[in-house]
Length: 162
Length: 162
Image 1 (cartoon, rainbow over the protein chains, first blue to last red):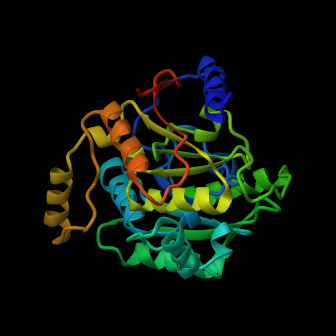
Image 2: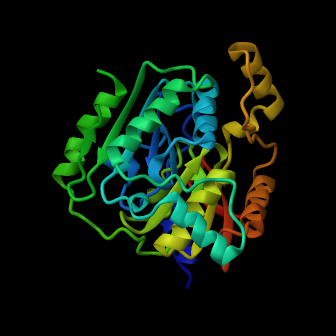
């Protein structure tokens, strides 16, 4: 049995105890942008329940055009007002450089993508870079509460980046 | 107290019962790409635990350059092999068109972004479009198990898109 089939079986148990539907707009009016890291269960780590917050995730928890797109839709069409960024310790993005990744792709695929890998050497500094990208973007309207954190994968604790 | 402060307080309770750290590579070797919708708690809906799967999320659960970036990093550097796509019923992306959203931005911001909103009129059809984008992309190496689903926000059930 594939892992996907195992997850589908898990979903049957989830659906058996499911109570829905909830309203579409997030009831806590918050959007979280976090790394895709498997160890970061955003709902549990932030005490979120279904229906409360948009959750946007990618490699690194960085802000590229696609996160701006998601945040613009989240705020403009679905009423979120606060943004929470979460990077984390021991991130895979610390283990390589954009140039190394591009070189691997050139060698193995014979082509280079239009996107950069968005790797970084300092987690807190990349949180600050991500915060700046949000604050500088004209399409994200609500910037009264945009805060960034580093999740410690050893302790489960969030530390704010100032 | 802001919602962000409330989430930080929740995190203190989470950290108090936290056991870590787990290894960096996802132990189930799977990456999930899902919509950012607040009602879709990916870990609970798929029975995932911390450390098991990469979770990539955005408005719609669509595949743009940034999801290709995340999936390429997930597979090439962190060993995932299966991909699970999850869209859902009652999605916000069904309520507007790219042209309408761009027109709103032109009117309110006085400029238009480089990105399209990626709205869609049919959830299952957009799952198929997303599957195709993955299957057609040269930078994502492992395509032996790429499957797409629609999560029903009324029942909590996943239905596979064929």
